[in-house]
Length: 387
Figure (cartoon, rainbow, N blue to C red):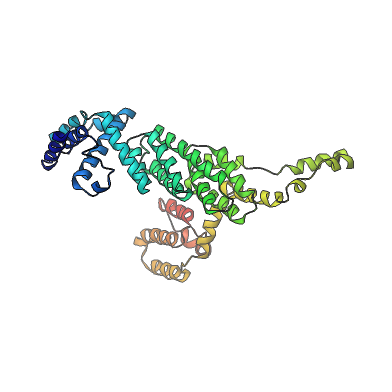
């Protein structure tokens, strides 16, 4: 063991990290223990830990079946091929034990993002679940930070492996649902878990679960929760998935007391008295259904488009006098160039008023717009769509 430890140091100075790692693993934890206090910051230890993590990630990807695309680009340098062959000779049991020590070190330091990064790169679901569980030992806030990091990493860095991403999101959904159910309504943890949980459900294409989540937020007594639910509706509309948004809107509760009231009027006063109104069992039912109606209007009622048009119309700084001077200047030009200049004049008006629905200048100058001929008529018509 001592000889292996000495030889490992020699290979380290010869810039052969894989061989140095192989000998360090043979030397055992008595000579090479990255979790020891005195080893932190040591260039020898840090170099070998990096080599160990790289080998661990490669083996994890091979075991998961995600290495096929990388093997197609195996026309690299000869040194890289030798490193790949050498790393394949590392003892898998000793390598896993070393990486486990590094995970324990990350848990002790509270660096769950580092541990999650390695677990996600290695495509190791057990390690991902272990990291998220361990993060809960440092409090709900630390666990939410780890969950949000894992969710962002799953969306941004694991998108090429759809099955693995779905498995990771499933694990995240379990933890987030637990925090959402156990945290106090209106608390920061409750709101943060609701936002992340909505994103996770959307990634898993579960509109009914999102509808249930929005029902809890919109049907509550806390105003902040209702506003959060409406904001989540805006976020889903921005995602652009109309089918998913429509399914979420259909999953929201609807008020069905009108049909019961009509049946009660036909059956007489006794039947009307025997049917308890919804407001007696739920004093907030009317307010809740107003929130549900607002949510459906945001999701499928075109409310976002109305807000966008209203904002652009109110904040439009286009100058009508500028267009009038431009029109006069263009009319003063000769007929030989009138068609080209007129086409660009109409385009200028469209850019100045894009999205504002303000077409008053064209309405007041219809004769000028009718001067467009041939293919310029298509451009003039399209300019109205821009406005």
